Length: 64
Length: 288
Image (cartoon, each protein chain N blue to C red):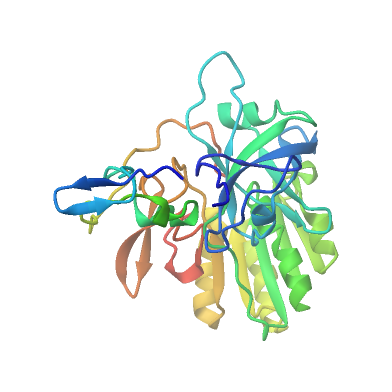
């Protein structure tokens, strides 16, 4: 297996895959093995989050 | 070291060696051959696909995020969440029943037997049943009937009786009645004859409570029916669950698109339907 380890400052990562915060969270552990990443970073959780997008005029009908 | 496919390579159902199953990861992307895809009435289609082992572990109330083909020349952004309608573990298939309302579902409707459906899942939190219950009440309307349908399978596993009150515009749109008829009583209430009016449904529920045939409530598909079950559940101390619907983007949690308001111990809370739900405690739901 190819050695993809990299050294950033004093930290050695097993590979250079480090998802950016915002597009990644521990929630993704339900679909990928986080241990396969070189590292991951996360911004502080939003205590009072609101929907990131709003429902626009949507053709989906609501029953009753 | 054994070859491990790149994390984004989907599991292709029915072709080649199976991908290594990482037991601690519950969901996966899979390419599932379409077995059957038929209209059940003028608005709803019934889709049956061959499923991967992880997809077959889906619990009633959980959903898959489906990559729908575009119905036209334009791009179709984002997957569409679709709750499972029936889980056929014997034939290794999962089924969906969905309403064609927008570009995503009309695109999905173009799939034909032999095509492949790309789906991610199973995702979210499903329905739960207490084995101590003897008889439960399921109340659904419209698209909610498809989400509630697999409760019939869950009830059968536990040997629990079900009264299913299926609300619809007309007899054409009463669905899942065949599945519920196998485990209990089906009561269809319709707009055409006025039986779907909230006060008429309340009379049915009150009768069931009086006969001690309502150990728990399950609902999906209508805000008015949710409020009715919530009120009766609170008054009579009957636990319940509601499956919520919400527009989603990632379906996995990080995007926070599907947030809804809930009320816990008198305090408002924002939760994500995709990962905290889509099934929630009936008394904590504010509106469907």
